[in-house]
Image (cartoon, rainbow, N blue to C red; front, side, top):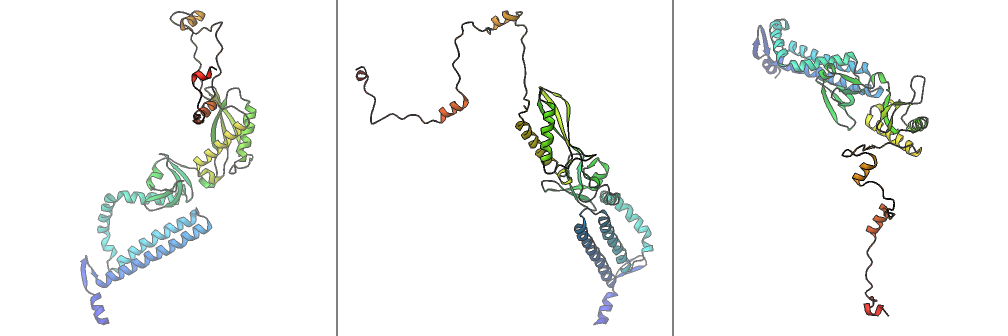
Length: 340
């Protein structure tokens, strides 16, 4: 039996130069390649679990995970070719031509792979960072793969961004090195409002928001008067939120805007609305009282007093009130009986 298996294993399938590729060589190559790939998967899985137990964004463990995984696969391919019985030195010319062909046909894949390695070793982007692309795409980096980087936005939607896009285009890393950032929340009040009162009530409201960091020498909540608008004073709330709040910018701005509105209304500070004043200086060459007479806008000296208009609530009550039904049992008397 063993002699038969040995005979089968020595069967030559084809020749590659001076090397003979046998059935046993193919089986050995497949076994070696499988073992290296399985080892790479086990090592990568163990390092990934260790990274998530210690710190999801641990850059050192992530680099070790990627280098060992890719390295074991490459070594497995080389070992598999050796087990196949192929003299690698004799494939130098062939490998050169093959490399040129792969470089032309697979240049996109190779470009993304090299870009991924650059991101891993450059450490400009790490796992857990909140990034924003030039087109407005935002999310938390989940994984830097050989072809694309996986990003999860705040709607729990996973986005695959090619690695080269993170290198070639402008990218904002909002949580670089685990640091928070200062945000600006704009709001407006009516002209004539007490600026000090506005400042005090808005700062008090901002400090009541649970994810506002306490004031320090370098991080302080402030209220700035930044300009004038249409019948309004333009302000900005300057505040330092927690790192987790920075990763959810829309919800964070909505929470501060809500708190500011409640504070202004509670303090009786007016929020401006668009207003327009129209002044008519001349009408068909007439001015002053003559223009008013031409427009029939001069008030009469003996104008009859206007009856008070019905309020909106009263009108609604009238519409909702049921009509009075006629008294069928006691109908009104005829007209000739009412005169008596």
